[in-house]
Picture 1 (cartoon, helix red, strand yellow):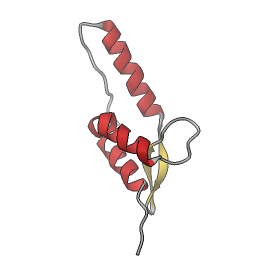
Picture 2 (picture 1 turned 45 degrees about the vertical axis):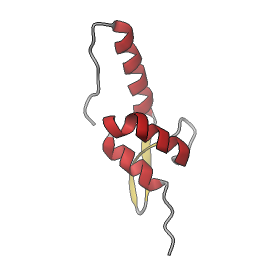
Picture 3 (picture 1 turned 30 degrees about the horizontal axis):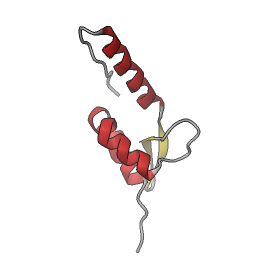
Picture 4 (picture 1 turned 120 degrees about the vertical axis):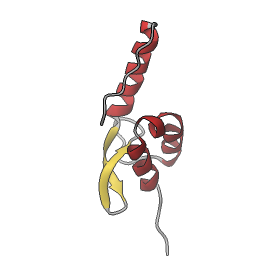
Length: 83
């Protein structure tokens, strides 16, 4: 993954962005995406799989822009295949 950073003339904004991105990245872990083990965004520490509501919110707000492949994997991992 490419380094994600923000540089403004406001150190507090830069620090807040860095902390938010750090939190986002720390919750990206291998997860089931159909038959593929792919990086997905977890709801937080201690979660074993992405939660549908949290995945929808996280991909809408941040992940889709910053880590689009992870956002896609996360959304797909919440689907249930039925005949």
